[in-house]
Amino acid sequence: MTAIDTLYATILERRAADPSESYVAALTGKGRAKIAQKVGEEAVETALAAVGGDRAQIAAESADLLFHLCVLWADCDLSPQDIYAVLEQRQGRSGLAEKASRSS
Image 1 (cartoon, rainbow, N blue to C red):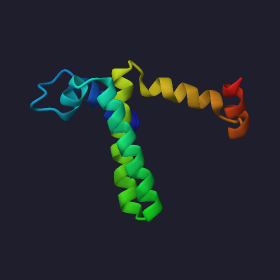
Image 2: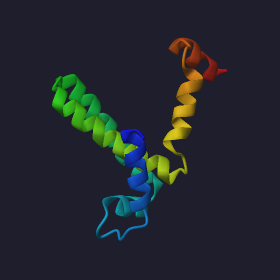
Image 3: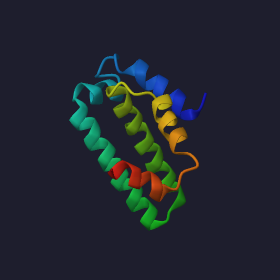
């Protein structure tokens, strides 16, 4: 089991917890739009950390981004395996060819 799989399993457990005791439950209770907003915020913070070049900050912000992305996947009834399957389908293809295939 990967760290992402373990994180995702924990998120699934905490979604049904008391929102006063669980950030995941509280965020989930605010709805998908709020979860998506948090993903966007964390993505921007990760990008800004990358521009700043501080490896520890990039790692910390990346962890926050992955956490919130897993919360979003759970809300959308997607699992890490669903994402892994898409990545496996793309493996061995040029990024440019893959992007062009989505445009058509």
